[in-house]
Image 1 (cartoon, one colour):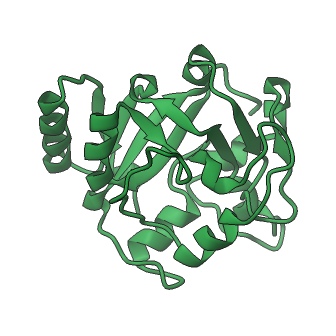
Image 2 (image 1 turned 180 degrees about the vertical axis):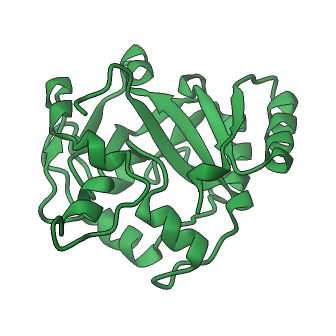
Length: 211
């Protein structure tokens, strides 16, 4: 398949981080002056540290800490590592993790600056882009795969699966189109948080988006 007509973007985060997002009214990058001081990370801390020093050499430049990171697809290799506790990543249950969903259309509506990649952002083979026309460079078949392991026939599949969309500095809360959760219990938790902040957004249960 080629580039879809509507491009969805997916950020996984710990559900505890939603409180600060609702209070501040935006998603912020790690380097943001108003970043969450109690942010609960769920990723590979070693990789996060390495990414923080990697420079992004196209506008708006900076490094990975200057961006809010999304994937183009669900069921990422990182989510697998988080749920299974692989590579010294703290093991988390799927009930702890939520997807924050937006669209490329919303990014443009809010005039956010961005860059994106054709694979895992830290991988030396991955290329960076900041032009909408270059979205054709994303391997849309692979980012949407549920099975993404490298094979003898395709030893680069895992890298391409992890293509990233990076929003510079911040993204307004109103740019979210949905929050996806593992089960009805978490859905009710999220809806309660929304009600406390007078915010409305679709909350959808999709257990198949998890491992």
